[in-house]
Amino acid sequence: MISVHHGKQRGAILVVSLILLMVMTMIAISAMRSTTLEERMGGNTRNQETAFQAAEAVLRGGESSLKGNTAEPLATSDGSTDVWILDAPDPDTANAIAWWKESTRDQSWWSSNAVSYTGTLSGVASAPLYLIEEADFVRDSLNVGTQQDESGQVYYRVTARATGGNDLARALLQSTYAKRY
Image 1 (cartoon, rainbow, N blue to C red):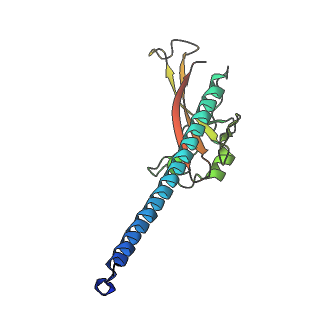
Image 2 (cartoon, rainbow, N blue to C red; image 1 turned 30 degrees about the vertical axis):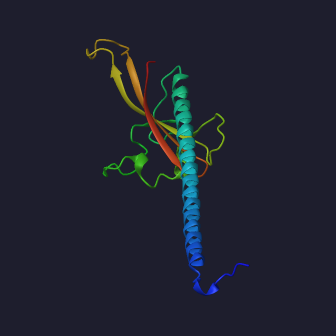
């Protein structure tokens, strides 16, 4: 028969296993936090990409509305003809901030002053909108006063605003569009 002496054991294995269990728990908690953070980052990236794609679509929609015009639209200071005079949406031209960068241009301002996109987009919180400004008329010839009908191109600035899956993700794009009438 084998006899076991219990007097020399001190319980070191219990301490070592508790420390290993605590280390493994910390690694598991860290991995869960990292995974949660990466999932949030992925969702935010998707949300921002949705906003960008919607803004791109509405920007092309604004350009298409100009392309479809056979006669030059009249630019107004209040946008009543869907074409604004350049920088007319800016109530304070003395400041150096462009009108589209101002924080006062929220969704309600855009909804009441811009044109809504007529296409269908899924996954966006608010309807994407665009605003067209007549920027400049560039003549084909430098000879002034020699022709009755001056020919040239009209340049427009098209500004598009869209949101992603919620209103926190916003994208604002601009393009310059030239049209000869």
